Image (cartoon, rainbow, N blue to C red; front, side, top):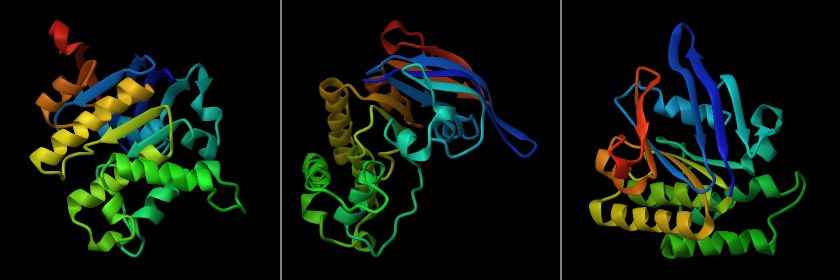
Length: 228
């Protein structure tokens, strides 16, 4: 389990400020839900933590400054599920999920038996075994979204960033995936940061909920305390 600390994180796109001095500490194993209207800065925050956009401020995982880590080391700490992932249609689901093991595979090495075992376990956990040998281009939107989530879980990182990860799923499967992710939090101790437009989802799954607007925190607190 790992703690994520964010100090004064800001993100700028040209003349537009997407995120203004966001500060928060996410204790190890906690689930934080980010909600707010489009343009509130939620996705920009996740992209900054994932190292995909330039940012101001400082980020730490267990006291280690992320700015000092290379891409491979950062990918061993943080996995990211984007809202609109680029998915190659000519790869099988197994091959795509195996990409999640890249941070642990040498530059000139291949996937080990352990790497393949991790992928098998994740596919079983998310009930994707029947799709393992199918091309991604032949899967439905909901099936592809679950495969993207499986790739992130295959990274075996202590911190997982989720940007609307269940939006493409029907109500029944969405609830099943919510339960599976909550089980992972309890049993493995993953630290989750979830972006969602579904307030009910955020309140039911999160230990704390952060309401954002125009790049800033409006309110943050525990759903049980009525703080959000």
